Amino acid sequence: MGYNMSFIGDIIGDITGAKSAGQAAERGAATQAAAAEKGIEEQRRQFDKLVELMAPYIQAGTGALDQQQALIGLGGPEAERAAIERITGGETFKALTAQGEEALLQKASATGGLRGGNIQAALSRFRPSLLNSLIEQQYGRLGGLTQLGQSSATGQAGSGLTSASNISNLLANKAAATAGGQVAGGSVGRQMFSDVLGIGKTIAAF
Image (cartoon, rainbow, N blue to C red; front, side, top):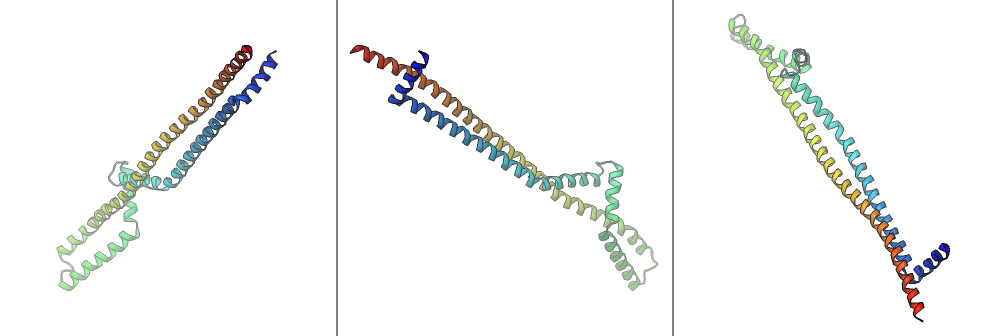
């Protein structure tokens, strides 16, 4: 009997269009849910790609910040010493030292003050002054990389928040579409039952 009622219900559903409407609603909900899922996948793919692209800049900024801290002693005395030694052992410091000291000696020789105290004082001050200048220069250059890394990290964080918000909205859309399809399926069942009763009453009236 249940089988006959189901069979009759299907026929009535076909006649009234309720069954087709229900199937269309469920297909539409499935399509909407699938589109939302694809949107979620694309959001995640794009964010992963952004992280990959930003990684070198963030890493460079992090390394530069570490070197800045070392130069001003925040990384401890050993790190500070190593940072200064990298400058004094570099070709720039060596070349500028040789050129500067040679220039001072030539000037003193030309004026006859080669053995005077002034030239000795000038020579003693030259290297520390040059080192201080190069440290400040290096700190400034590292600061540019630090700012680049900070900007990249900030941009990545902002994109992450936007992506998370978009994914949250897409998940809500997917849930709403799925729920809508389920509700539509239940409504079709009630409509078909109502149609059966209505047709039964009509037949009984004759």
